[in-house]
Length: 252
Image (cartoon, rainbow, N blue to C red; front, side):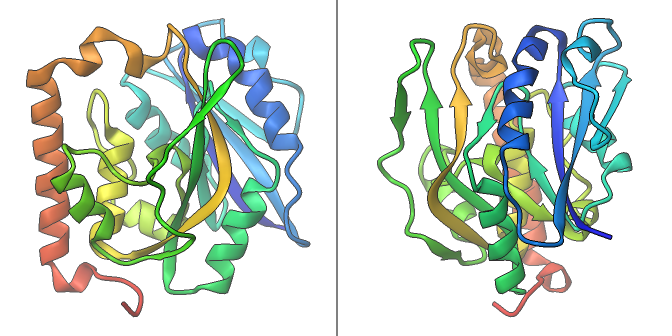
């Protein structure tokens, strides 16, 4: 029986048309021997729009639920995730070749590492890509390093939460994704940083699509009052976890 990486995708109707490209990027992955992937797709809502964009593949698990934003959809998807590791893939993004194998290898080779992130390229509407010029070096990310950077850089992390691959048990212990209208993945990343070591993969692992319907491009996402509240609760949770000695995992 194969070991499994559960790839979790939250999707709402406007982004459904991008699912075939996400799927294509998934089927092109080549995992280490004895490993396979499971694609757990959860619609944020209950429409007839999303399902037609999903192919007939036994590795796909699809369900729907009451609207609650991406964090709720991802956490609901955890009920069907069977893998030792859980990988995030947003509906409008694409994995790069070899991404899952690099995630799995890093987590298997370093038992005291509980999560990975990787380099990201923004995919612009004209097909061009733009990278981030302040990526950390390939290798260990010490416990607390991402949280410290985030707090001192206007709540912007040096690694991207949309590339997370996480040990499932720790993800569950932390409660999945935060119940926020946005930044729920940042909240998870900060919680992970507060209690455990990570690993940064310098090779590009994700094409992060920029398009008008993107949730993070909407005006509401930048509302200062809401953003301040989101960041406050994300920081408070991470600080509380960091202060609890019993919550630290791994050897560092």
